[in-house]
Length: 164
Image 1 (cartoon, rainbow, N blue to C red):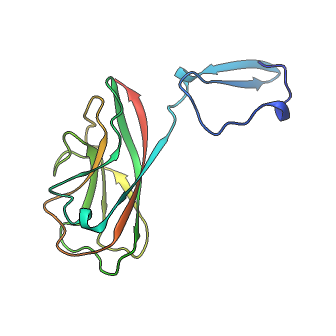
Image 2: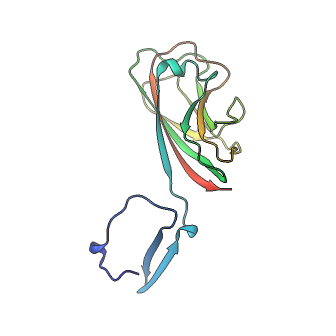
Image 3: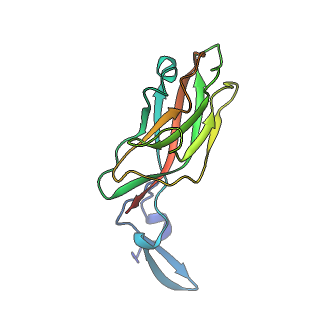
């Protein structure tokens, strides 16, 4: 362990793959390598204009960039925020997030609804298998495009990056 007092240590609010955590337990110093810790929770925020929301069934929008070969982006939660609109979306309002290469009516990991823009919506996991070696994540609307609505969406996805 570095021979510095706590107040002398530099502060970091991010994690890197080779980080080590140092702890003192009952006067004994220990180190915990990154491989023994839970992966860092990452996030990516994407703005989707209302015109693009109206075509999300035909044209999904990528909300997490491709992650590279040998990795998967495992989504945990997402938050949908609404802005700059006056009319709620009607019909086909179940927004889902899944692997960009395979997201469709049956293959997705997070699901939420965009029919009520009165407050932010938290998307929950649905337990479907994660697919897509190196793939990103995309937002998609199930069963068809919404028929009305003009709110822009800000979608923030919280995810783990896992080796496969």
